[in-house]
Image (tube, rainbow, N blue to C red):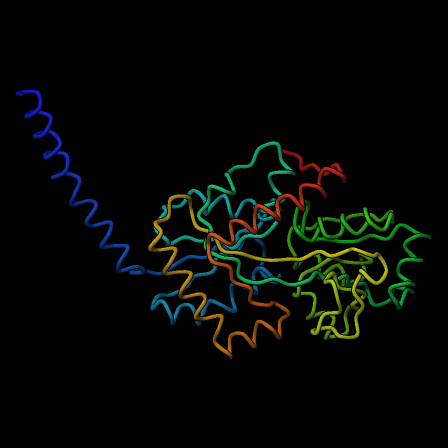
Length: 325
């Protein structure tokens, strides 16, 4: 009987000590956000990932009532930025944009990841879009069939935003399915790759919608897109499927938080983002930039990530792609 009473008193004491902390945590979640939120963009400025965050920054700040701070932290195909986020406190004040290279392809490319992609708190997929195969202005090939013929005669140099990025894997899938021998030139982000494409240093580039700026300014030409059909944003540009049957590659960007982020915070963020991206003015800006809002609730997003991992895992194994540790 005495032991039972002692155990009961002990439990009551622990409860009395812990309850205030639980109450304060619940109160903090209910009031979230109470200070500025940092969103890490794991690539340099100028790319589609960066644009996705910046188009959302102002309206999301208004919706949440707090300042949104964008921090560009590039390197290692996006891994460095996402790793920095993964070490932050799971309180909803440090988030990161993500993509195939940092979540679904990365584990197949590296013997060891600095974080567990599926252990991160997944908030939502933000946007989806095809890749654009763009070429330098003075490339002799003017059409997709001419490009394919030229690539058979000489080794063209094609750029991506880095080894293991979704751009790289989309290009790798193209060379695998077409049988073309092309030289991959990886860059540390979209911006540097676009600069060298405009300068004619590389022949082609598998890129995201940030490439549209060069195309619309006449500094590069769109040769093809990777969607199943022609893309309304570039209606006169053929789909690669027209030359390589069955070729489809989809690009996407999502938002993640550190592992253990409380569900009420995830729900608050998802609801706010869904509201913002549904606003006509915001949606129009995304559409004009070639970024199609494509939100998925957290559970559906996790299921999507698992499917995407299988897709890119096959590409990585077939191409024997590895990243030096």
